[in-house]
Image 1 (tube, rainbow, N blue to C red):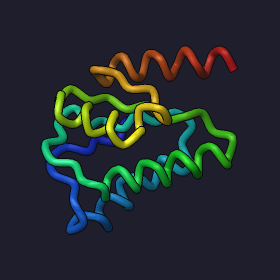
Image 2: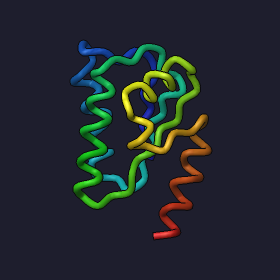
Image 3: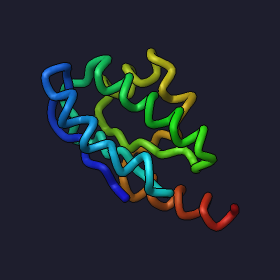
Length: 105
């Protein structure tokens, strides 16, 4: 499942963000699509970490992230998110990797 996170994500959209991320707590294969994200704050970073922790505690495979923006990619690197999630340059690449991991399990 692909969860699109286009646009700007700050504290003012926290409730919408939490609702959008809800499937990440249940679905086995998740790609967070940040390819059209323009503005990302700690609100998004914290929610991604919470989703990661839940998936890890539930013995679910890690979600993947697709991102194109150099700015967003640098932010993910600076916050350590890249150590928690495989990161790809496109949704297709992230989906392909996720299906490969599913077959290997």
